[in-house]
Image 1 (cartoon, rainbow, N blue to C red):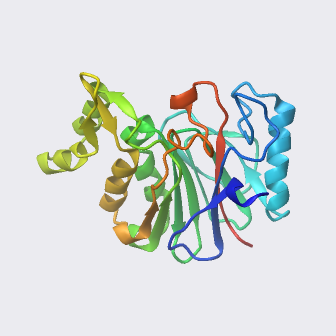
Image 2: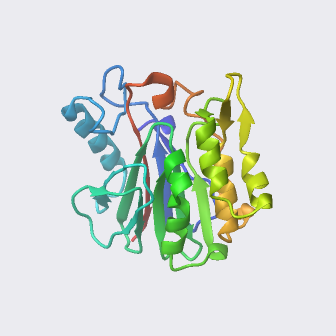
Length: 255
């Protein structure tokens, strides 16, 4: 695979933890899924999706065991000890070596979590609905390691420059806060949009606040530098294109 087909996490996790995101480059799918689409649920020809997945699998260790996820914009996080059929949830956690946890995105935020001692990893799909309903909290609470012993990488997602939401989305987050100070902290992640009554939401900022509240130091929270909407050359974006492909975000512990 060419170098810009994969983005590897640049974070404080141990070298035995591998975390990566694919781009849209180098696959076999045709427009509007061009070209490295790994999503089998978006209308692309399944033979092309299978071919793209095979390309990726050929570039990673052959003994990896793959666990795929059917995401539903909820807050359920499942622990997996062995690969099986596609699961329905929005997060996967494992302590097993060579078991690769997979999440597909095209604007939503992929959250990678690893214990600093390399004993457990998690992969979470966090759109605004998942963030509001507690998918990040559920992920961290499911870990055996506490927050100060975890590292997080925020993978490619839509940034605040293009993620316009209604006032009801902002209110959904603020209503869940238990104090005025915590409301003000989260309120900073919503800036007024040009459209009346709309706001530009910062998924990366919301995630960082939630993670820090769970005991993860800002020095151990990396990533959050991409915008899937802006970078049409490298990323699929549902908000930008509507009908489009999906990137893969995956994490595993080397065995």
